[in-house]
Length: 187
Image (cartoon, rainbow, N blue to C red; front, side, top):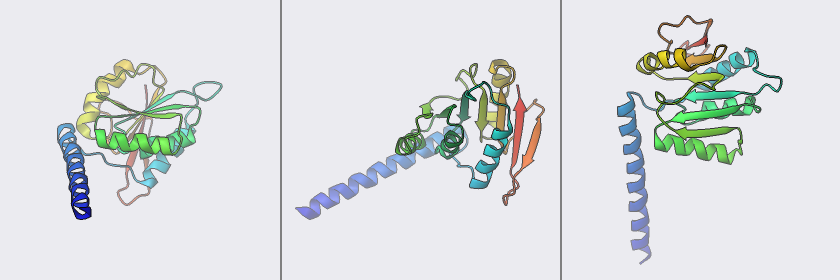
């Protein structure tokens, strides 16, 4: 009897893991890219860059979006460094979104939330800063949305891929093995 229960638990666990993997693969195929965490070196450079930007108000608070938050590591690190800010991770893949949500709960990170949504239909009008680590096709689609919706003075920080038709205020090159560029734009 114990062996049968063990086999049922094992098969159920394997089935759940297979479904989770299939979900990630399907959403990655549909998006054209899989959820890819930024390296610790790149996250540190993004934080350093963000801390040098002018703050929005007397309390240094605002709304920061991580477009395509994946596993949530960058959004959580931003939340630790910008405690007065509301950090919102946007993700459309359920498994990374769930892991991000759980990590925020475990850290008791009250200023960080994760939302399942389409990056291209999200309203960026009340956003002060956007951080993204996407791919060229996504940057092409987001470029006109940011131009139309972001309020003047809002910043966009893009890891690795530039925003087409935007002139960066600054381009940093990380000291990682890929020499990853980080682009800073101002709306």
